[in-house]
Length: 213
Image (cartoon, rainbow, N blue to C red; front, side, top):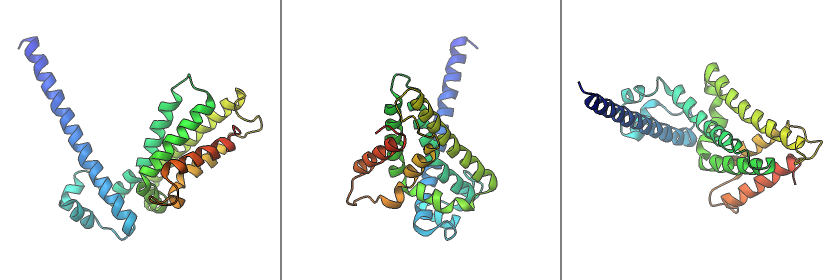
């Protein structure tokens, strides 16, 4: 077989694998989206896989082809907000040209938007995480700890650079993370404050905690 034919075959196989991967991701995300809404509205314990399947217009065996059980779906839901937040955090911190104050502002602003956009997911995470297996529970807690640790490092470096108040304890990273994660408890779409107003207040509070008023 010629190298041209081989390359064409490999390219075709690669394209098919990519399409298959995208299809699986689409189906998986759709299951997570529908299940998250049901868990949010009805509670995890009150929802069955039959109900999730009915709302998707599929059979329960179809769900099992993507998730081994209901708890696996819950774990995926709980992971959405923190995994997206970690991705934003790490991408932001990769910009070495910004000040520590600007980096903290951007992280808080972008993660705040994620929490607002994923409000149902975050509420389900906070309310239903107790139903996770020890393995999934600890894995997600490690992801959350990684987020807090990287914020703490940012604050520590900002203090050393003279951008944050000298007596600022890097432990305030936990308070900043708490402020962000609890947005759904007091923000309501269509409420008195717009999402951007809430995020602006969040940034102001985070900078104050970090000693960068």
